Length: 179
Image (cartoon, rainbow, N blue to C red; front, side, top):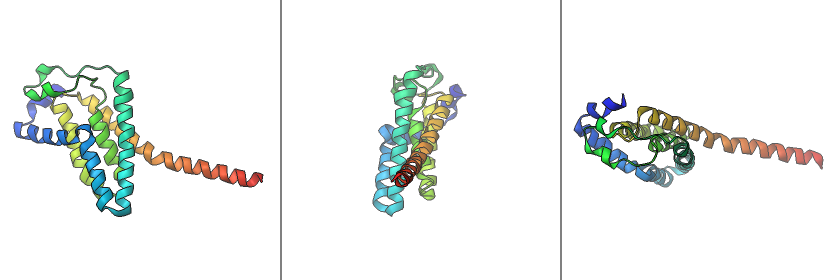
């Protein structure tokens, strides 16, 4: 499937995908979205932006800091892709896709707090994921694993504060009973 991805996408679509991917490089797109949400979205925008950035940070650490170090998977062969974008891909491990992990984490973390923003962000997140396969930077399984890392990161960043809050409340109640 990955081998056919580079040949099935029309050149104009490939160029549009490249523009989206370039804006997502180094998480620029997601950080920019967070700034806009925080600046113009009131309390909901600030909360969504904070959740999104936290999830993005976790996803980047898990995918790039841990996953790529453990799974030293080579990128797809260059001769599978008839375009020159394959020359711009990184030299790091292919597995998992850090771009996809960041995109999905940010989007999935924003959505529960601000569904309209999450739905809007889902479009570029999907485009980034498709572009990573189309450009020859990743296998489809790398993107699927990156999406899983992103979803897990978003879930963790939403659950950990609640778990910590419950634990601290239990400790406070226990301390109040001892006195």
